[in-house]
Image 1 (cartoon, helix red, strand yellow):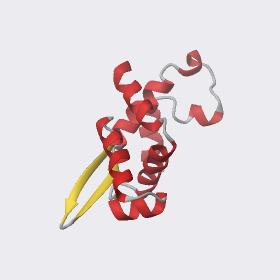
Image 2 (image 1 turned 45 degrees about the vertical axis):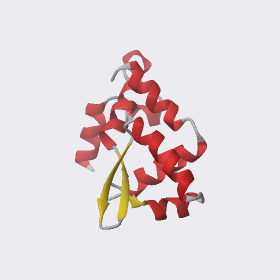
Image 3 (image 1 turned 120 degrees about the vertical axis):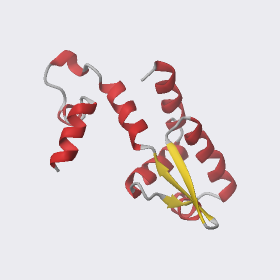
Image 4 (image 1 turned 45 degrees about the horizontal axis):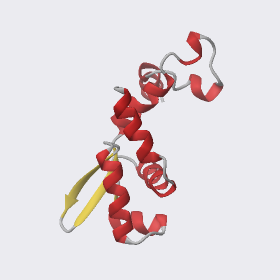
Length: 117
C-alpha cells in the first residue's frame, strides 16, 4: 500500500460518524446494509449519510450495489486488510508484539488465522 492511499483511508476514518458507519458495515458482513438501515443505525439523515458514504467510497473503503430501488453499501475488506497490514508492517521489529497486534501483524498471518477459524 502506498503512503498516500493509507493517508486517504485514515483521513476518511478520522471522523466519528464515518468511523461508526465503517464499523457498522464491517460488522454487517459482505452483504452490507441498505442506506436506510445505515442512517437509522447511526442516527443521521439520508443527506448526511450520502456525504459520509461518499468520503468512505473515495478512500476505497466502501463499495455499493443496487438491488431494485435500494442501494446496499458494504465494507471493502481487502482495502481494510491492506490498511491494517500497512499499519502493522514490521511491527515491533520482528519481536513479540502486544497480544492484539500480534494476531494481525501481517496479511499472511490474518489470512492463516481466518482460514483456521
